Structure formats: C-alpha cells, structure tokens
Length: 253
Image 1 (cartoon, rainbow, N blue to C red):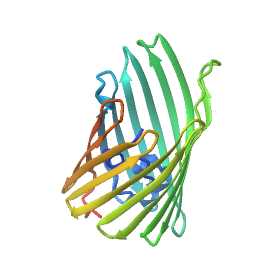
Image 2: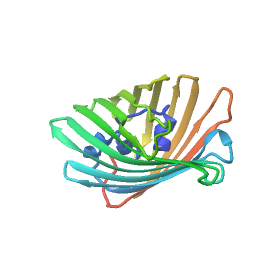
Image 3: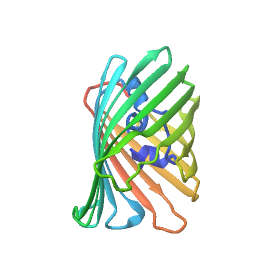
C-alpha cells in the first residue's frame, strides 16, 4: 500500500523523492536524507468501499546523517476484515551518496472481530543512491525473514521493488519503478511539477491493471496537505488525503 498521498498521486512505487512524506517508510534507506522531523497522518478509502478504509500515523526523527521512523497503519474494519501493521525503521548514509536502511514490522490480520486471527513479523531492507541530486536510485526488499504465530498457511511473499527518480529541472521530477512479487509484476510511472514553493501538481499511471492517478500538494510554513486520486477499470476510485506537520522550523526544499 502507498504510504502517502503524494506517492499515490504519481502512480505509487516511488522510492526516491524525499519530498514525499511516505518515502522514508517506503524505502527505509532514504531516512538518512531527511533533514527535519515531522508528524504525518493519512486517510484513504479503497475503491469507495465503506468497509475498506485505511489510515496511518507516523513520526520521523533525523539525527545528522541518520534517521528513524515509527509508523502504525490500519486497513479495513474490525467487524469485517482488518490488517494492522506497526513498523520501526532506521536508515543512514554509508559512504558518499550511498544510503542503507532497514525496517522491523509486526503484522496482524483478523476477520470478523478476531474470530480468525494471525500475527507475524517481518523485515524490509532498502538501498538508496544519490547521484549528484539529479539521478536517484532506489531498491527495496520487503517481508524478509517472515515468521507467523501459527503453523497454518499464512505466507508473506517477499516483495522486490526497484526504481529511479530523475530531476531534469529543479521544479520537475519523474519517477519510474518496477514491483515484483511471486504472482504479480507491475510498472509505476509518474511526474511532479512544482508550481511554486507552496504548490505541486502530480499525475501518473500503473499497470496490472492500468490505473491513472493525479493529485495536488499545498504547503504553508510547517504544514503540508496532499490530495490524491486513483482510477480503476472495474472497481471504484480510490482517494487519499494526508496532513504533514514539520516539528522544526526549516526552509522547505
């Protein structure tokens, strides 16, 4: 699931642009590039289905070339179907433009108010390379070393995603990534245009099935609001709204 509306608006799958609040948790290696702490909250409704809401809250704290993130996410309703995740992420610079990061995740799935319930843990490993702030490369492996609380079939597929971000101009950003699981391969493409220091327009698309995305970002002093929309050829549309609050006063980059 996309960790921010800014990410969803450019087709999802972005691993590189730290201006998107959720990237620090999509790719934990990018935590080493965060320069100011912030609180981030998000809400979306998948396909306009009442029983499939998704909300999350996260806290990001940087220290020199290191960063840490704590996140909670809930998907679905307890009386119907619900997935919950708590994650702790750490990332930092290793050498030059190379960054590494890892996440530890606790997962829980429940159906009909815990009538059927599973718990498990897994980890993510991320890599990020910054080539002169023009070309950005990202790689992330998710659900490594997964364990569950029961012996029943509740496997967590290892997910692999690789992506590139390009800044041909300081106000223009392109993202391209490829996601792979045991059953699905999917491409993500998007772009973001900064109209000013306070407004951004975004659009994108993703494959399998083809879905189109769009969104808007508005920021003022320490506050940022992001809106996103995603179409679907069969199901309803998905909308998402995010609020970000910077914890320290710092010029937005």
